[in-house]
Image 1 (cartoon, one colour):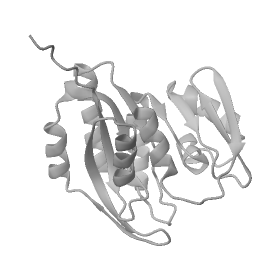
Image 2 (cartoon, helix red, strand yellow; image 1 turned 90 degrees about the horizontal axis):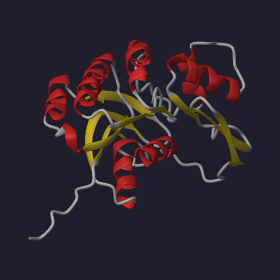
Image 3 (cartoon, helix red, strand yellow; image 1 turned 30 degrees about the horizontal axis):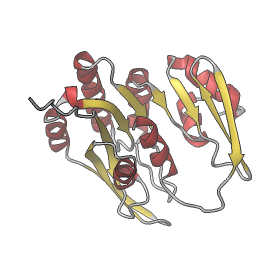
Amino acid sequence: MTPRKKINPFVLILAGIDPTGNAGLFRDQEICRQLEIPFIAIPTALALQNDKNYWQTLPVPIKIFQKMLDDINLKSLGAIKIGMLANQKTVADVVKFIHRVKKQNPKIKVVWDPVFASSSGGILLDKVGQKLAIKNLWPLVDLVTPNTIEAQILSGKKIKQNGSKLAQDLYFKNRVAIYLKGGHTAQKATDYFHDGAPQTLSGPVSKVKIRGTGCTFATTVAG
């Protein structure tokens, strides 16, 4: 009798569509293909933008988004990567979905890249949606990967803190692992990881300016 081939678990990607392909769902899919990781990709919204300009965000109609989530085999999932969520309705549905997944699949890992704004200038999650995600989504995930701007929003503090202290404060807020990315700094990039034991990672900033690095990182970790 031929042994049944083991099926690798899927990464579920919940993210927006960037028409340039440099960020968002298209970028996430490309990373999974490069890593040879099976994935399921569900769009949350369409961001009308290019590398320099942003015009509008069009969320996927909520009933269609709900239907796509309902049709997923939850036990086939190994990890979930959450990116752009667009508005509070999508955030609320993702929160319900994560609760449902974790009941059936307690070992699943969830990586949240808190995409609040586009580097081309657009708001990718409205303020009501941000508050809802911070209150209800954040405690459910296993890792949050903000850049310095997103981290300030998560902290709710207008006073700027050094990266190490900020990562520490964010970790102890929900006791969820934090990877604070420092790539927005001018010359040297310093990242701060905190999961109860702080770590600092430093390196040179790439001279090549590309979008989608946050998507790339979070999807790679989820994979």
